[in-house]
Length: 203
Image (cartoon, rainbow, N blue to C red; front, side, top):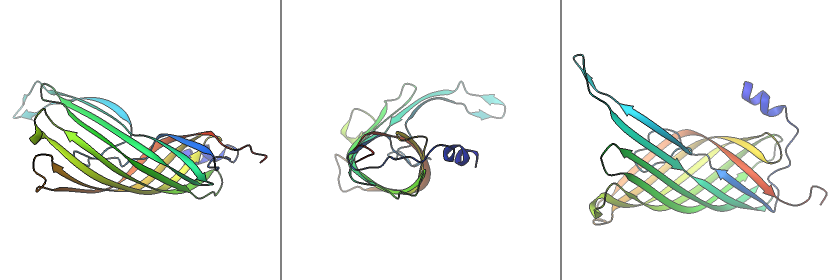
């Protein structure tokens, strides 16, 4: 509630106009979507330890990084169409690193209801994941993200976005397309959006 009050304390934003450019990290599902799902942009360093009957392991170091920038153009007031790139990297100590790279179209539609603007959005991603140097460790995938939420504007140029989303993905090893893995998930996400350019307010 404090966040909502904070956002509403600003003057009504004039963003989401035709001719503007939307850029930033898009709202993503947060949570363990195994292994081809993505979460909000960020970096993390973790240490995992195992304890059994009072004996502790030395711990396993894990490095995680992911980012999902999107750029879209407002073809009409409220409707932005563009593309999204997703890159994710993870490494567990001396094991081969895992990477994910995908690209695809992205669209978001805002309902202009003042400083808090509800929106719906969708994204299709086509890409490849790799868990090692060999073909049996690589997979091609196609995923679909659908979401609905609200953007809370600090001013005409920046918003924080909260959304509920659905994630669906199909993947196949590149050396055996007869094998399919399906992932489905629902989750809550957060992101920031930046609004650039656009027509003059007096037009």
